[in-house]
Length: 470
Image (cartoon, rainbow, N blue to C red; front, side):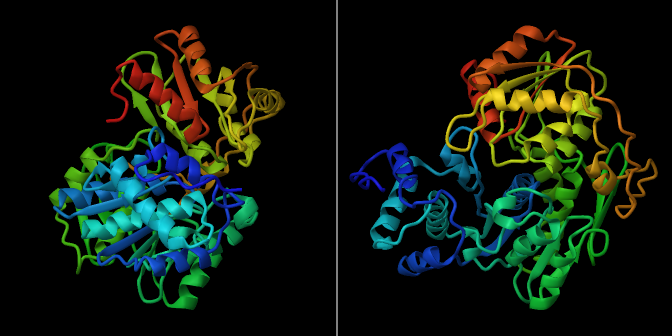
């Protein structure tokens, strides 16, 4: 049952607590309710609109688009979720987080307009972001889809260009338990006659079929756009545009060139409306920032923060860890939500971790440290599986600059998992403190598994005076 709406002038924290009580289900996919309220609000965005859907890579792609477009001089709004430290991270205008007062003013307006229609937390906050963007008179809005696509609140907006970064198994209780089913849901962000950028190297047939059925202008990586690179620089090639001699994105990770090429394909598809120079691209990629995505902190021991929380993301994380070189010991601080495929996710990293420090995450979706530890012990004595991510989506970058996205790296042979130590903690902060106590300067600490794991550790480091959000 909903509590009473906050009084006039209430704090943002009070409003966010209220939003959690409005609807009987925390996730209730569907567009009927939000469309009804949006109509009452006379909501419309008179700007270029780019939506970004996908299992992984959405946040990085949105960040690159924002950085490039800001460098090009456009007024840009970016909406993403979830957040690491502050709700305000979700709504940005011209690179700055929205203020508490601006968010509260929009929530008050939505509350007055909804007239008994119950909206979820995400639906209310999506409307707040869109109202802020409407008032800001943007040139471009970059909108990250929350869950799936077809019934997600962000799909209220008819995008001028839609990006699908990747399709893999996650949120299966809502989207289906196969890539084909999940791809069908995500492909519904595409619009008839408009560019639909697909950066998944091996997309489910349902994605292609839906794009063809509605008459979307489908751009496929390896078909309509591509990238190549060597150790110093990389290049993008599209249908009619090529961008050479690009510096690597500031974001680390095995898949960041794939994400960057998707962003550049979207900009090529929109080039008649958005003029973006080669220098804009270079500077935008050089200065892009996104905490919590393969974020390596300065100092010793090496500390890596990554919000990856599904098998696909863990596979990419494993590749990135392998590229870092040898460390005597790896300490993994992990906390996960119980609706994730925990066993498959941890299995992707089992051979790379010497000691697991399992942390309890609170809330109704949280998993206890003891449950995580039991899963770690169960997979610890098993043979590590062949990594399907490596077999399907690894990039091959050749010294000559030749890149063949259709050719996949040979899978690593199965390796028997090592005996590892497992311990449990009441919170990510406690687990991280113990990892720091145990690790030497030559070791590395990995913090991963959820925004709710990385966020508290980032906050702890921030309070210690570390520059962790740059």
